[in-house]
Image 1 (cartoon, protein in one colour):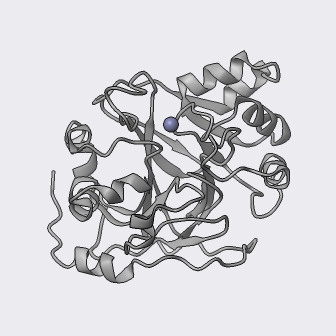
Image 2 (tube, rainbow, N blue to C red):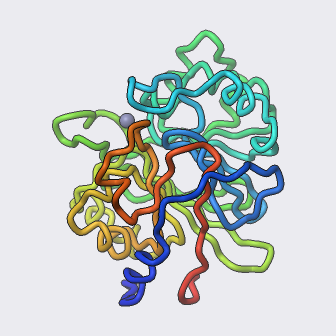
Length: 287
Ligand SMILES: [Zn+2]
């Protein structure tokens, strides 16, 4: 076990943080970045694999970006830049991260695609009229309790580690919702390791992460995608760099009306589809 002590990383992170400029989506994207879809949705190319996280949802709860039909159909059909997707990750079964209908349609439309999702989301898919038992073989259902050791498996040449991290509002709200943090590691063609993490609607209280301290301290993450409220924590820099052991972060799940404190901060965050966050190389060799 090893804790990284990197005194320069906080100042480097601050220097690297700025509100991203919108840029055009390109089909042949570079491997070293993640690209915003909407809300907590992102796509990324890691090594040989292309992954989506929380890409399809059907409830914007009045404050989040609404998915339009063109975008929904492009993701379901696998039109560029959503073509050749190997797997789709679902953090939890809330309507602003997931839609049983859209996921069933995605599985029907793309016969090679896989889904990695909490068992609660899979149950919602099964209960929907578009469910087909033939989908089951391409679904990895995650069933974990808080603090339980990571579920670990390989998908499309990448290594996936899943832990359950309580949903924001814990313990008063949503404590029964299984919110999954996914850490995905892959090897680039250059042989370099690349690792990203998506945390869904995780609650930022440190106790949830110290509960899984062994998980976080054993591997440094190049880029963590956190719900924007992580940046409101008093010691957000420490939370990301030390507790989560991540070199850089990008905020997702930002409402259409960006909170003033976030807009005024130096934390990088997505506010529109197509925005990109670089996945920086590790400062030191990792394994
Ligand atoms: Zn939620």
